Image 1 (cartoon, rainbow, N blue to C red):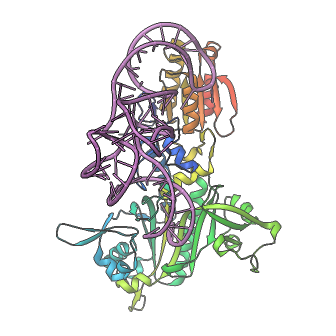
Image 2: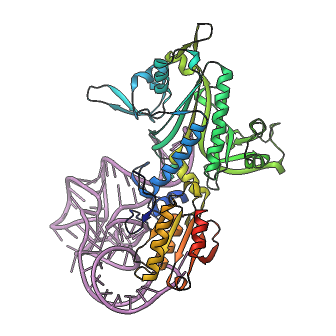
Image 3: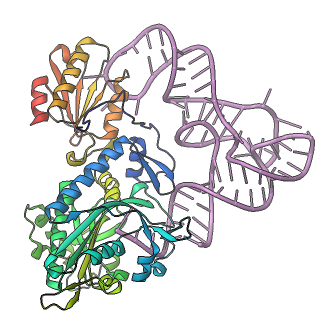
Length: 435
RNA sequence: CGGGGUGUAGCUCAGCCUGGUAGAGCGCCAGCUUUGGGAGCUGGAUGCCGGAGGUUCGAAUCCUCUCGCCCCGACCA
């Protein structure tokens, strides 16, 4: 069954809000509630309504495609895990109250996974025995739970969140480094496809252990952490083929690691100061888990080798908020086309007027048949309400048909990003939207 | 986990100090008018005033306990 790509607003479950719910502080949270994308179900836990769910799936799909393109293979691990494997790695006690612990009916200790290193290591060690099967990068996109003391900012800092996590397995450090670089590249491509400028920052490896690690921060005025980076980054990142070597030499750090006296720090006129939202984190951690959990393969000489591992996370649900932080104005969201829930919002200004109805129905059918996702506002409502809702939900294109224009054979096409409007024939509008 | 705030209609909030028949705007329903940027008029529905206990003739209002949510900090993808 092919997915329904278009929708009539009169039937679509999209409860928009004119006023801002008092619980929301930042733009993305406010707009997601107002646009009818999410509703909070408990602190830091959200229901994704149809509009939000569509965006989440678009983002997820881009992440998936870039992981696949980088040679990673998708699988799906469960949300609930046994405490046993976490005892093997030693993290069951080390992980604090952020871990949601559960007891089943047989009094077995379980937990809702905050991450999956243990589980993937178990799967790997039970099924891979030879270096010949390496390298491998396995990933899944699954809901995680971390019982944050203080959830906030809507889906940007929820307790339940959707995350893509990949795990690489290599026979030696050189291999692990290649895997790391493959993921590094995939991340740059992934965020770029979503219209985001994501800067890899030198990150503190902290408790995870390892010496290769980067955080990817999306630039947004409302970002939670301050970031400092070399202006040269922007020119390099704008190119299609990213020069990793050059890029990795540039200065880019979060505020807690910023050191103006460091010899690496560029002079003031080349140092950019901005705010960022962390949307990805990659790190190499060597044999930390393979040693603790006995993930061993036979090497070329027949002797057992502990595999070299790395893990690579992307906050998929957080990205929805991050993109809105980067793309909105005081009227609402301005989706980049790649992640927009629909490409076109078709506005019938006078439902019931036979000429308007006919033009809109024709456009709706034609675009849908050509694979263009359309949200058709066929509600019997006032123009102001329709324009306000369209601006709020932020579809990239608004195609407006009203009695005056239709009589002259014209419709209006508005670009949500630029605000630019053009009057043109139906044919010309369709041509532009299907190009 | 420390500090602060808040809970009254679907949403935003008033009422609480000083106890006495539960309110406004928006939204929703019906009708009329209106029709290119969140319309106007008329009529209507909607609340265990977060929960439990207490004081009182009488509690949204005072007291005690409790739960939820939000903000600041510490923590985090």
